[in-house]
Structures are given as C-alpha cells and as structure tokens.
Image 1 (tube, rainbow, N blue to C red):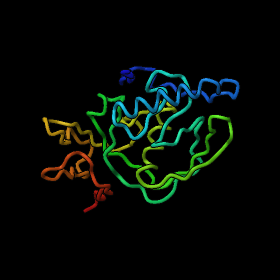
Image 2: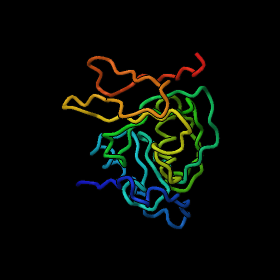
Image 3: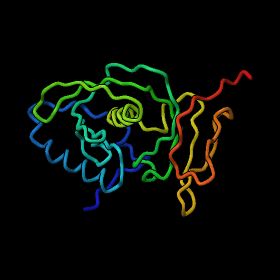
Image 4: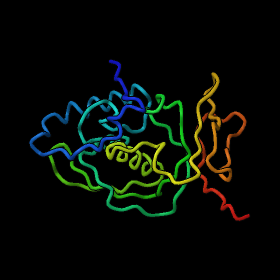
Amino acid sequence: MMNKIVQYPDPSLNVPVEPLHLDDFGGLPHVHQTLKEAMEEYGAVGIAANQLGLNTRACLVGENFLVNPVIVEQKGSVTYALEGCLSIEYGQKGYVRPADEEVVVYYEDMEGLVKHKRFTDFEARVALHEIRHLDGKLINEGVEDGLVEMAKVGSCGKWMTLGFKDDHYPCRLKKGHTGIHEPYIPKENNE
C-alpha cells in the first residue's frame, strides 16, 4: 500500500495538532500501523501522523510510538547535521540544522499511561524533528541564521549545497560521500 506523504507547502503542515483525548485512543492501533508502514515504505527513521494527513498528535521515533508528546527538557551541546524530511520533496532536499544532543519527552502510550523517555544523539534529533511536525513546524523554518539548503543530485544520490544564508557554514561533502553528514559546529564569524 502506498502511503501518500503530505508535501510542503501544504498549509496543513503548519497547523499544530491538538492533544488527543483519552476517549479517542481507540483508533491508535490503526494510526500506529499506518505510521509503521509508511516508515518502512520510505525508509524513514521517524514520521509524524500529520505528514500522512492524520489529525492525531502521535509520531514514531524509531520503534517508539509517542502519543501527545511534549518536550520537557533539552540539554547538551547543540550539534549541526543534515536533516531530510519526507514532507519536503520526499526527503530529496535537506537542511543542515541545529539540535540538542539530549531531549526528554513526556508522552502517553496506547493505553493512555503517561511515560517519559530520554533520547540522545541521533534519536534526539529525530524526536525533535517529529514533535516539531506535530507543532506545525518544518525543518526549513525556525532557524535564525546559517540554514544550509541541500539536495540529492545525480544517480548516486550525493548531497550538494543549493545555497547559503551565511557563508561560515561549510559543506562537508567528501568524495564518494552518500549523503550522511558528520555533525559539526559552525565556526564563529569573527576570524
């Protein structure tokens, strides 16, 4: 089954998804299954329900199904890395974005039990990304300066820089590189 991903600039992606009431939890097994299938279909590491046109405040971060997630703590150093998004050209365009290396999320499970989970490193980035979706925000929004836009080009799928908002964020492509960038922190512009 082909799951259709809602694409930018569809205005529904910018509408925050309201928390789900416990009376509405009956449909969650279907939502979970739909998200799981879409992740597998597109080879994604996370997905939010509103990316599939579902008005449900739920997302998958790896194997973690989060209902009504709320970020309660962000800490650690901020790292910059390439992020793609299925809702922006089906992940063929990406952005070098900042993210905290550790986040704590409160959420509910399918039975409505409140839980919390600490995500670190790459999983923290994915959790932030998916919860931002549920808050009506995309990866191409909300970074004051230095957002680097990139796209997969050629048959090999290498990432290439499309443009800079600020020239002190270097592209770190390497020969033979296939699109996963090592995290880096940009140099200050005072050199």
